Length: 331
Image: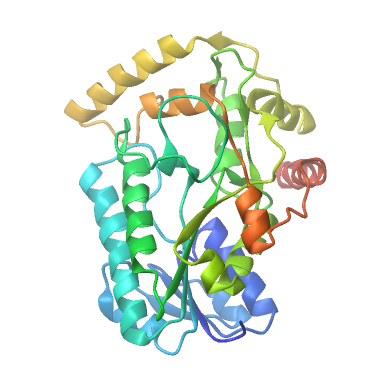
């Protein structure tokens, strides 16, 4: 497809890089953002100021668009459940409504593998895994609710596809890797559990590739479906974190804490944050304890088959480039 596109969440890592790629390809791009984005505007993007509750902004963004990439959402492991469902659930419903009203032909939704969270190891699971209905925080359940809305909207007039990229990283990431490294350098991070749990992490270039492939995938093949998107090379999480730390000359993480202890501490801290006027989010939550100690890697055969997805930035290449990028930032 080569028509105009509308992107929600362009101030974030995935949405921003997607907008840059589309603009570089000569596509007409509108983005929804809650604040000005001068860098994207300089590249030629049209900025629609607003959020997912602003139907007027969504209508303006969707008008004339052939594809909508719905990337925006409430992320995090702490906060009022109502806020997660308002933004991720109702906000997604609003996007679908605006797409239908404007005659948009394709909606690509950025979901999350957390939608199949069950508190246990997820080792090589595929899209047949059931959607999460209960979790220690509202992020997984609200994203699962949004996925249902997107899948239910698929039909002859609007083709919908959901993508589940896992732990997106690469140059420009200001959340996943920088946050982990900052905690490690401050001595506030310990290996939870055995330290041998395997996870998938996904380079941003591969994630953007997947979004563009989802835009052009045949409707009768991909319509209404969701796909796990990863690098296809699971890593031992704590070994990879220590590889990054070594690369930037920082001390490695060696101290351990059991999953039972971390999970219990998360429950206590959540209770304290719920009743006391404490700022920010708890330093540990039950959800984070589970995520940092269990396997989370996924079968991407469906994305390879239906979307033609093939990760082109390998873990080795991407990790080496990221280390150089981090070292330059520290210099």
